[in-house]
Image 1 (cartoon, rainbow, N blue to C red):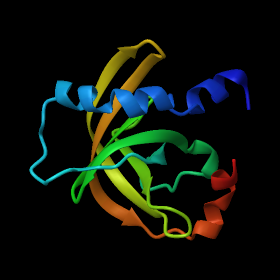
Image 2: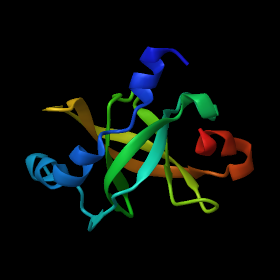
Image 3: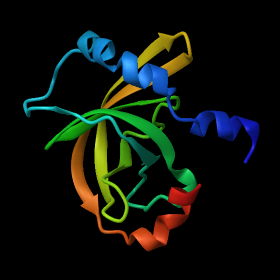
Image 4: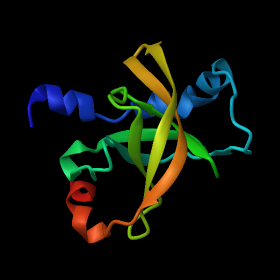
Length: 139
């Protein structure tokens, strides 16, 4: 992994995730119709192209902000490069892989660098075996 890859895959700093999620949430227009719940968890996302399941190397760590039955909001150092993504929820061994449409991207300048707040709408679920992708949980 190059140093650039390591920087892109670095999680959002914990101090930002803990202290600033609330203020970031207030600054973003609310478009959801479902009730959202706080969801302070580290998960992963990857681009989703033409129904092709992403490989483990394509997933990047994210810091989740909130979740509802219809979608998820998260912070990341890397903006999605495709309009569709695969995002994980849950904890081992009960990890779910959701396909989602990127609904919003907001660039946020912080003292720790630029992060992106991504809002996404769940579209479906991929039925993947955790053992097939366990390598990125260990990485």
